[in-house]
Image 1: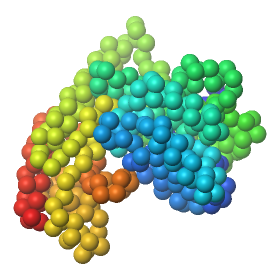
Image 2: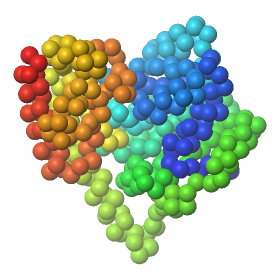
Image 3: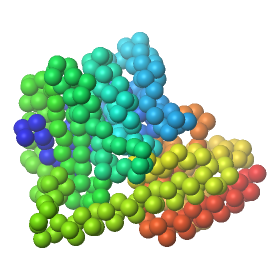
Image 4: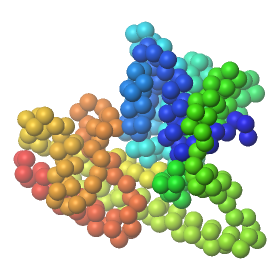
Length: 344
């Protein structure tokens, strides 16, 4: 228990750990591209260096070990003191669920290169692909022998904002630290203590999330039935949006194996790219604004998560109802046809 820190959602814990890791402008943190912006924004705020490693879209946003080595070596050759590695699994905004081998390769990579592994695992309950399974970094470290050898530094994050609870406003979460030097751990404790304590409603939600009703409890059957209904519906919605977007000419959408999002690639007409440059605006943003104005659908431009040069698209969730998602797909289709005609 003394290795677990309660927090106001996973975000507060992530910010505390990054604050401890970034001592000056030479410190670097490896982050996935695309990635959830809390990492890039916090690193910028603290004056550190972002060391991006690209996920492979063509293989379902998988991690490529050659790419990890390239990113690390390039950064260190420029004098950046890379000291940590961020893994988001299941992925945000990309929705992939990494294989057991991929996660084991990553913990070995971090151990070999002396990197603190920040395991963002807040979507661990959101796995929809029947052939995929969430495999935690701590389990990978244990099964590769790294825990027994005390040769991995690992911080794992979880939250009540995701999963099947979705209680974002309650601000409940925690982190577990493994293999961290006791003196460093003491400083983390001081940092957390400066905020007094996390909110009581959030702690209650976290307790319910990790324990929940037991068989025989009055609420057990209704609780399990509601969880199953939510999960099954999310699984169907993930397929609705993936298949629907892939049916639109100019769209390419990888399967949503997990999490709550898809991150489609959208082919933009040259006229739109030119018009966006004239407005000093990323074409992704121009497209998202056009979509909002014409359909009322709000998405996040892909440029907000970083992406490969020349790629365009957006992130959307599939949290609305199944009926609403089916309607949304048709609105995406109609808007894209109109947008391409306008800028042909």
